[in-house]
Image 1 (cartoon, rainbow, N blue to C red):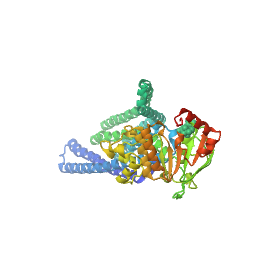
Image 2: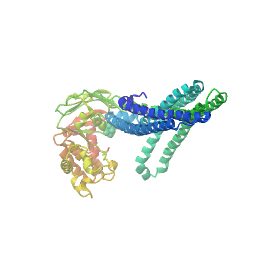
Image 3: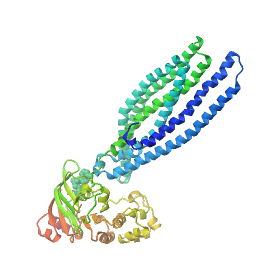
Image 4: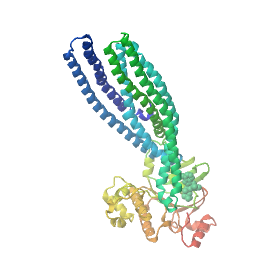
Length: 577
Ligand code: ADP
């Protein structure tokens, strides 16, 4: 099957194909021996001669040898087929995962999470089935009828003409089914993906839905999606199933016609009785695999839709960068005339600013001003539409994404913890770190005390998403990861706004340990922590409207002072965001 997803695995696929072709030869051979067994049994009984058991025994032996060779080849080629096809599919999944890691967040914005998940699971499974089943059925179904067809043509070419005629007529219907699958299968896959998205949405928001007593309403949405899928699955099955059934009936009918004409020819003396029996037996062995070929052609069309969807992701352009680009030791960041838009309206408009190395720059502004967007652009989660962002004087577009991210640690409000031990969750910061190094980072991040009180300490399992830990604890684990990573640039969403004072103090201590001598960009939610910042950028509607130190900004009659006064009045020292 021609498809670029598989083009990399050509030699493995050729191995699967050759293995299965070879397996079919002993199979064809023992089918052919049947003919000689029939001749050996029927001719003497019709002519009244004695049956030559010596000859018959040698046929039996040939049959048995061919049969056991077939079994042996079949086992070996099945093992090869399954090992290779499962290996290829797992490799494709790894490649997809790797590709997803390299794509910018814009891709995930344009593609539903259900759609992406479905490509990784459902579509790759189809690729796997193509190799482990459809191609095999196709080859097996093709070779045996070819061998039997050639053999029967020598027995009686006139009667054998029924075989290709039946095949041509039946394959016209298989072709119709294939066309239907081509159109309806794509729509079907789309609905499968939409349903996966609804299921993901439903399960991930179940807690929220329960708290608002909305489980019923939300389930209605899922119910509608499932109903739509049920209807479309039924329609696709019926519409493609009808021509397939007709094609199968034609093949059965072809066999019956062959028997009918064979019998007629036998009566009129144009065909011998042994030849007739040969047609009756080998004809059956001819038509059954042809059915298999027809069905696998249709199923492969179905799988092709999935393969195209995998290919669609794998062929997505990755961010371009200079290979082997070395990073400079300098860690300042600069925005030069940067404009960025998520949809149509620009979120950042012609931003130019500098984040000097080993200094702390705070981003201040009301909610929606564009602070988080600035930090996401530094990590190149999104591609900017205009301008340049540099790290150490190098355009970040020219830096290999892995290299860029190795320079940056992010401590954001949303902390994701994996379904693994606390030790391994911290080790995410540096996979090569020893247990001692992880524990040292945890101590600096003020995690050690609470981890030590857990029943299994650092080996305690955290549930996926980190739901079994408090907000403050999760945040300190994320700081421990960042400490372990030893990155030069720290992007920090100061999330202490919603924490209790004890947690807040511990997090402040952890952050002090993290940010020593680093280039720090902090999204500030409270003024008390940024009064000592080296520079403060005040954002409003995607533009920097003020900048300077706290003491300078407070002297101006601008937004900073207004926000400062508002906080003072509320008495909380915290900015609303
Ligand atoms: P801040 O951090 O200052 O609160 P953000 O940078 O998060 O602001 O958001 C700036 C603007 O961009 C807001 O109007 C927000 O709605 C919009 N925005 C943020 N993230 C996305 C996204 N993933 N897709 C579309 N719009 C977004």
